[in-house]
Length: 313
Image 1 (cartoon, helix red, strand yellow):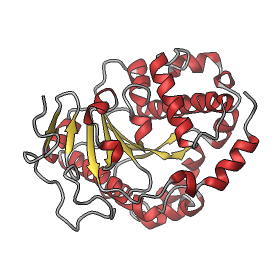
Image 2 (cartoon, one colour; image 1 turned 30 degrees about the vertical axis):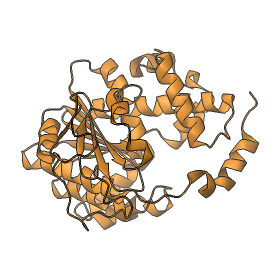
Image 3 (cartoon, one colour; image 1 turned 180 degrees about the horizontal axis):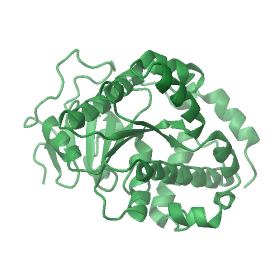
Image 4 (cartoon, helix red, strand yellow; image 1 turned 120 degrees about the horizontal axis):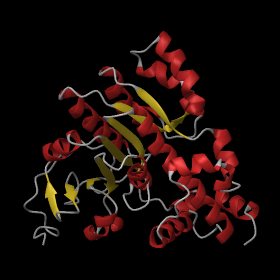
């Protein structure tokens, strides 16, 4: 049993005060620690890097607007490259729609991170500010690592709102989408979607969103399979969960491959129970949090519109 789960006196800090971008929770004793749920123990930063070196595919799950998560993702990529590995870096934030833009950037300014952001029209992409993603792209570009789009195209996503049957049967089988999620995993995903939409999504809309999430997870896994090994995935933490995310589809596609799922998690109420991570991730890396704003208040207008447009139960 982990003897220092509360006081953490036996763990070594991973960042000095003032080295974090996110302002809240910096004094939390979990900040900077890396937790191994299987061992119910903390490991140090170098041990986490060593685990990554042994994996064929390293999945780095973030909270999109937390700059510390992107810096730590960059640190993992740099650690792999320092050991002579050349992993492809696949991004949830990029889709097949972005391939022509990547080609233009690669032909004109392949060493410029700023030129990449401009080529991708990042400011109009809907993702958080490009500057907080800069360390990840810089880590890839500085080591001449291949950047791979991993998400579904806009057209594919639009078609999937009609259900997984929008995909040909052979493609559903190839991706592993013809195998239902275990009931507990599907229920937890549905609950997370309901919570994320502040109770404004009805059952029919939640069921549709579950299908879309599954298809996106399968697409992210497909991108890694196509990229080969080694490869790194940059994605939201929900996508890299072992119990229902990308690892589930990688196990279907390439059962012999070694997968390491690392979640970067903000300290706070959600991090109080360490044991809940046991079925979710291989490693959990704690950071300060960006803010304490209630997302249900922040996105109230958008959620109201979603509720009005959502299909009947």
